[in-house]
Length: 341
Image 1 (tube, helix red, strand yellow):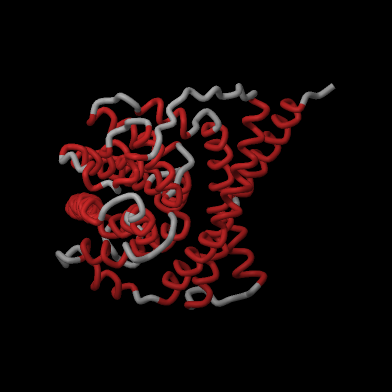
Image 2 (cartoon, rainbow, N blue to C red):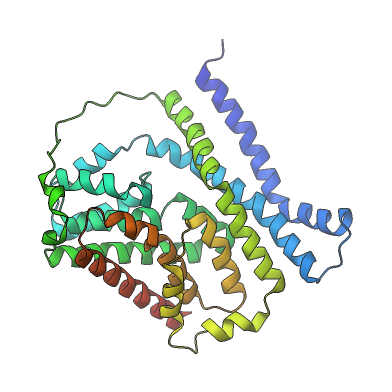
């Protein structure tokens, strides 16, 4: 009798083989659809817009399903309570590093800002360490990594992850050094701490596989529209925006390109899934790597909705310091990357 686990292994193996074959032949399949089925003339704006969209949509979803499934299993070993326990009692800089690294692999986004902030404060975790986590969690996650690999390759992905971690670690460290607890809303510290040990049930590997499937269903179900919108915007820019327009506006020659990208990015509300396809086209059209990645970091790491949410637990002074420190960090990263590349 075949067990549930063995059945899943068989299904996963079959799906993995199908995934590899489809991903390998995605480009010729796209060309067949555009050139032979639709019979569109190569080089035209509409043709190249559709080619970009038809190629990128399945590629992005293939990568997302694969990585979200794997990370969903990994995430089953983590919880908010475990995260707090790991960070509790750590020294400032060590805690900032650990918090930023945990932010990458834990399932939290900007919408979780208030409950996470409260839980960390109640557990006695310093403000600076908490901010390192809150900066890294939405900025660097499996969705960002998957899309960056698919569109730019490992080199740019590694640069983004390392620079994003640096911004999260140093920003949180600086906030911690300045001892800014007085700018946290008074009611936060009056909340009763709930630090009792919570017994966590043991989870079998079969259940972790189920959690992987559930992660794919839930996360893709929430972000698919952002992906389609982002790729559609990117496809339109790919096909219709003149090659030199964006490079002249936000090219390396202009000192203001990085700050301008951040100012444009902060009011926008999107996650990594929606903004990365746009970043891909920005780079394709001549925007420098540092400027494009600074734009992305500002959209996902300093979004206006998150700032509004944090206003409920932070005083305006700390919010201003938080935005200023992170923005300066992103600007420095942008200028350094523009000098190197």
